[in-house]
Amino acid sequence: MAYTLEVCLSTVDGYLDRCFLREDPPRVSELARLLGVSRESLSRRFSQTVGVSLAAYIKERQLECAKVLLATSQLTTQRIAYRSGFGTRRTFYRAFRQATGISPAHYRRSHNVSRLISGADE
Image (cartoon, rainbow, N blue to C red; front, top):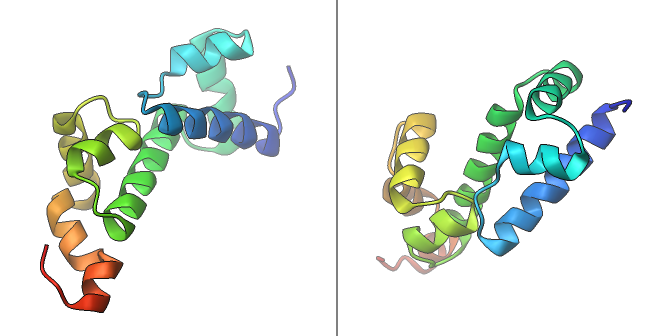
């Protein structure tokens, strides 16, 4: 299977979007099964084509989804954890803090558009 950057990203992004809609954690093994390749082969090909590991790309997409939801919604952090593909709130908090250096609540306080416009507290 020939991988181009566009095909790789389109395929993975489509899978991730479906996971986010279903509130299911994305899994490299499930994506590989859908594509009919081994997990190792998919990870290797993705990394060679895109320049980052598949696991890192997935985690970055999850975090970006969570940041958007934190900044634009009033969903609870538990709902945001599920909607951004983290299996649990605890996993979400750990990954978010590790990636950003701050908690999801702190990020929300400093980035929530509706709160900043209205000046209201949460």
